[in-house]
Length: 148
Image (cartoon, rainbow, N blue to C red):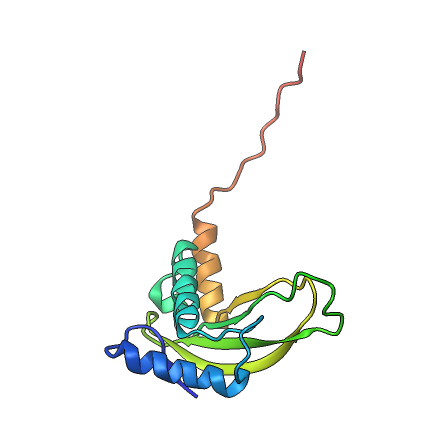
């Protein structure tokens, strides 16, 4: 599966393809699942904004993998868990186009937090860490006068 989520010309066709992929996994379930195409698009856009806000360039964002799963039920009545959905998104080489590459059924448990993870390639991670490290100065140790 590879459905273009961002930078699309035909949003209606995109939404139809995303809904079909979600329906294939979820069936008619809507509780604790991702069932709207708009939610997938929002997660893709949020992830790009988050990476940009963290100081990543488009080149660093390329080939990043984003995974998202909603939170579990709030009530402990679901003692054995509930069915949920995990989506996997991948950023294209241009660093701005995101594709839906995976939809899977997973189990969530009561009070389990949502999963919202971004994984970078080793090269992108090293470049990002190097860039962040350059923005900080090294503190020279100085003696602090004792309080009187």
